[in-house]
Length: 371
Image (tube, rainbow, N blue to C red; front, side, top):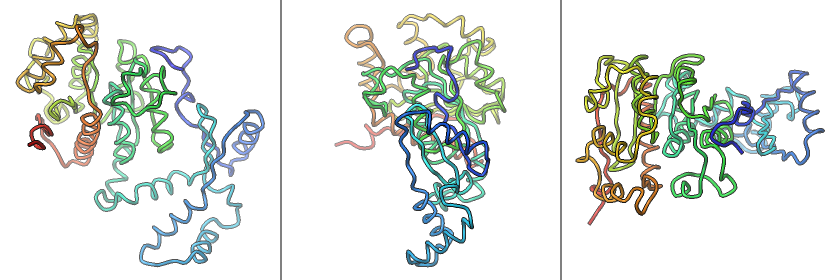
């Protein structure tokens, strides 16, 4: 289990290990792992993956099973099929999976994207890095980005752990209670696509790690901000503005999407000018200044940032009950899932140069689908 901060965190706690048998050292390590770790579950569907690869490589031909097998043998050559591709080990669940290696894996996995996203765009998106702060709402976004493969690398930051009440909108099982939300999302992504690079920040955004979150191994291309902390919400935008990184946020109330293009409008005021008092504040100082806000102070900041005129009636009622009859912000799975779709679509368009606006857009299902 990984709780709010874990000094013993290792990358293998959320990132898989790769074994390519063409490398003798990898094969030797693979054999030693199988011999030393009990109850490793092995999944080998490499033949069906190769069959898919053959089919998409010959789209106009109706191949028989015998012809597919012939193409597979020709494709892999003299090496044994067990040595083809890559074996991927997931330490947290002790599962070993035989997969096509990276290029062929991506070719097959993104094939159903064609030509909504063309090959050149898929190649471009592989080079992009997105940072997500807040992995309750952000989990749906991270998984949708990974499913669609709208980026090649993700930075995930959240200090919190999965609680039972989070499961009204978090895709998790009861066996996952107590796991850090960023770690949990990273593991899901790794099992969906082990070739997407993920870096976790299980302490959330702090003075010590904020620069690394934004710039380690190359600057973020987009910041997706979905956190509850007002201090982090503001400080992360100040940092994004300093680094000229666009910011995308979904509030999952009234389907509000917020886009701030600091990359093409570096002088743009935060939150579309709704919080002018913080414009000149250093992001690190902002983390300290707003660290311990009361519920009333948080609501006051949110009223300025979002505008009470942009809050649904049901949310207004809920805000009035905070720390009286409820203890957390209300969020529904349907709204969070919609947010994952909206933010992923927006990020893809920004990264492909198809969308350049800074604006607020409302996709309010309560208004669009009703009696």
